[in-house]
Image (tube, rainbow, N blue to C red; front, side, top):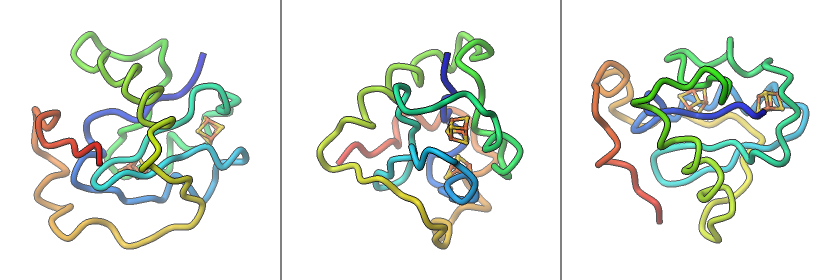
Length: 110
Ligand code: SF4
Ligand code: F3S
């Protein structure tokens, strides 16, 4: 079991989540964060911190969001993605993107 960052984070990156994680297991890309599944201890503290409810247990991922389980694993090992432990400003258009569906095509991997 692990927790997974899903689509709502894309183009937002509020980063409230990283401030509470006891394992510092969030990794940052250009417009998305992921959780390293082998480092996450399933404490669930980060879930309530995300303003757009992007973080869910891998047990509760909907069929539409299932692709994010593998994306969290692969992108947390991506050489261009770095561990993020301190909060930073969200992306400029976060208010617009927070409510947009179907953002997978916008995900930047490097
Ligand atoms: Fe970190 Fe806990 Fe969230 Fe896993 S569930 S990413 S260990 S805060
Ligand atoms: Fe993303 Fe939510 Fe964290 S928008 S950066 S998962 S607080």
